[in-house]
Length: 181
Image (tube, rainbow, N blue to C red):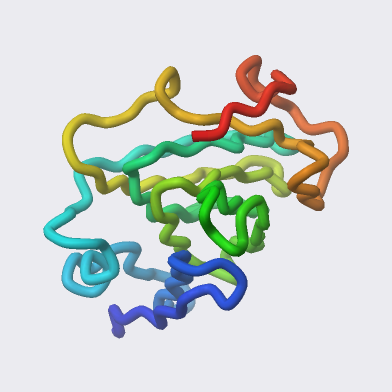
């Protein structure tokens, strides 16, 4: 059984990394590694380390995001189901400011996406349900929802091509006012 990753930097937006784990399959199913400290943390700046993990379960047609903050690195994936993962560059000095990249993540295309600070993170659930996993690295204390920036999921200036025009949204995500960092 192999526990290696293929690690590639995005060709569309700098500093986003796509990690594809090796997957071992047999008649029982499959097994794959989601984190190897020495492999993944070398992509982080300085002495930064991952501090905590979160899981989110969502139903079909749920869209979560677009949220971010100024200091958190996020390693995200879908561990069950299928999602459209979207990352938006919110770095005002970046040549790819307000550009986005999406990834379809499911059991046939298992990937982990490393998202740096100042990027908007969002995903849409395309399966009956999905389990989403976040691994977070940051200095100091965690920046929670009230300190994060949020962008409207259908902001015309970004122009994301979502898999649904009428997703299920939280109250936070229904707001039309974009709040950039």
